[in-house]
Image (cartoon, rainbow, N blue to C red):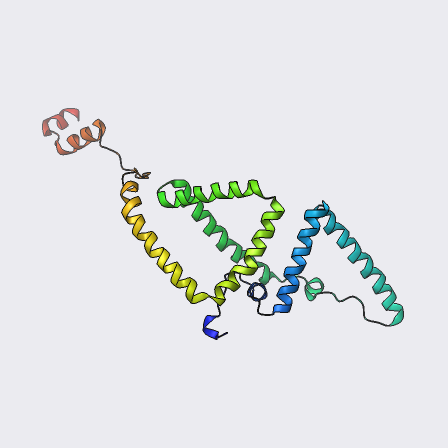
Length: 229
């Protein structure tokens, strides 16, 4: 594969990107097979995810405890512990994660604002259609099944796109061009007739403003001022 066809994913982690793009086929294959076996185990045995996680952690803790105690007498190294468990997380790492989370959270809030205000009819229609499709698909599959489908798509679509990037880009641009033409021809004329939500705060001058303008334009007589004094 030429280097020009290599793509990058907006995942923010190089290890996750390498797994999804199968940079190391053995490692990616092992992860995919492990997730598939876990899905089959959860789907066909009827065990809950919490039960499997708790039992797995129980086995891990028990084996680590026994191995460390035996290793101390035999002069062997104990169980390997990640450096993060030893030193913890630094304040700079927490700040970087918080800043990254803030960026994505603000983007999500801005998107929700665009949808809720109703000013962008096309965007609101797309969101409504997507929610409708998700609701229909959710009725066909369980939550675990949907989660596995997401993992399956994440492990196949990015790699397929990287392998056929030129062909997919040409087909996408062609479909986008035809879709834009049909939208401008059939959809946009009707959308322009739909009234948009207005956030204007301007008010129509009433009687009070008219009286104010009249009072400002009419000067006081000098004789009336002297009588008042």
